[in-house]
Image: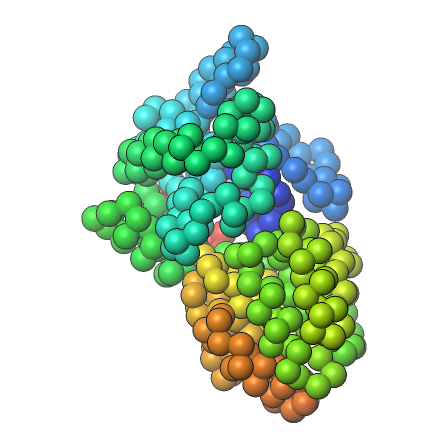
Length: 390
């Protein structure tokens, strides 16, 4: 059986992109005939891993020149050579529509949520939630259309049109697989699906798992948050909560448009904060190994890989109850689950983990055992393959 994995980065290289590449490598280890079609940013450490791999490019569904139209035709023609197609999280909406119309019966959408699901779930304008939207629109559709989305009337019209195409696309797929029970339920509601999608949990980067096994896990004095510096991640709540905890220190790893605001808030509330920006896997491993525990109080998170990554380093997590993270953290055993807007409770949990060494270390050990048993890349890939083949 020949399998094609399709993914286009939506403006940044995050958990969805890391997982797609990890699934690709694991399928190859399983001797599956698999081809990766990918377009988007790739950090240096992943480019090194992919060196020599025959990664294929993906065109946009809107051709802006005759040569791009020819690329699109070649791409769609090439997909005829595959027995199964996996759209891994996301590709450009119009291209997804073409794929669903031509190859819907053999296509599986491995989903972390719909295009505007974040906006629907939070009630907020997607433009304010996703700082990568203008860059993504420019890459897919050109500078003219990307400028037009600044205007409410055009944005609302475009969102309505894209959503209509998206619903039609999704209902034409042969199969939908969700990355969490939260995502599965959200997809049923958003797309009015008759059948609840299968669930295949993601897994942490296998290289991180290897580095965790090699690391001595010497603790430093800070709490860690990893991810994009965006409103969705609710990082300002972390700072407010930490301001009520003696000796609390924070490290945020990630890029985004909220960096300056977060720095100013931390200075105002006198919370020591280090902003590191995105890091390669080796530096990130050092951050996980040295932190006390992980903080992930996002207001919306379909799955969330960072609690799994922290668990590999025997670190517990304080996570949101609004999304997938509460499916990977056992409340009171491998970490704590909380409402992301309850600052007082987050402060209380921070204090408990910071000053109860025995509890923190015991939770960390249990977290590592859980993630290695239930969330390995081998299990994730095997379950995905089984679902696709059915």
